[in-house]
Length: 331
Image 1 (cartoon, rainbow, N blue to C red):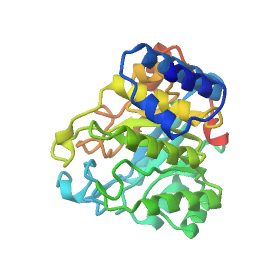
Image 2 (tube, helix red, strand yellow):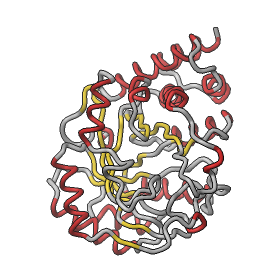
Image 3 (cartoon, rainbow, N blue to C red):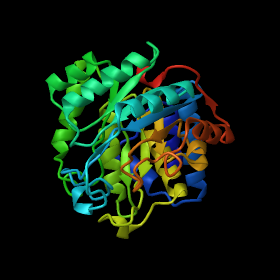
């Protein structure tokens, strides 16, 4: 059958083309072919990461009615969920980030909205870097930035970035797709390693959109890609579309792994779940502080999971979890 041929091609190390990815994304859930895709996704992820999954951890730095106005985000000014600006005090940032390091997170992220001043973000990065072990990997998750700013991030101690060309970019957000891709290039030129993802996936997205964005992530040659669903937040403009099931996301995630081949070690999903790990997810995130998928001021104990939570899910899915600094960002 065609699906079996495409899957075998991916297992053999040959990258699937657009038409083949359309076939894989369009395979019905719970069919024999879908089970084959999930099995292959898990097997390829294991080989790509040498059988060690990773748990990364992120601390949000601020809340702001954000002018980027992403329709799916709790921070978007248009969604009117957060009406005032609030910054997490530096002392609390240091406590949270050091706690994640102590708990064994393989990489640490600082996340800020577009309203957060770039110079302040650099200062925060320097302060955080002072408290961490020298080998700990620090990642930036921020707005688009220039070539000069990319070099400044590198100088401040950041090893890489998380950045994505989101589904619906330029339509569900005010950010031009070319701007996101320009930031990819700026990071690469500065020596910052990119992590990215096919996100945020909603029920309304077509297989053609999934293929297009999967190809973008593959061509960026990141440390990891993967797939994450859009969280349905009451009060946001995209809430009416609902939520993609974890079962459907596991299928999408497995197809992304088949599309990535073996040279991109990481295959992330969010939020952490067992069926995703069974289908090839080898990267989860723990979270603390403000979160664009939450309406609470601090997400820990609510939507955000701990490092221990993430490790437990991986272990339930028969994954080993890496000890020490991320290997994905040192691919």
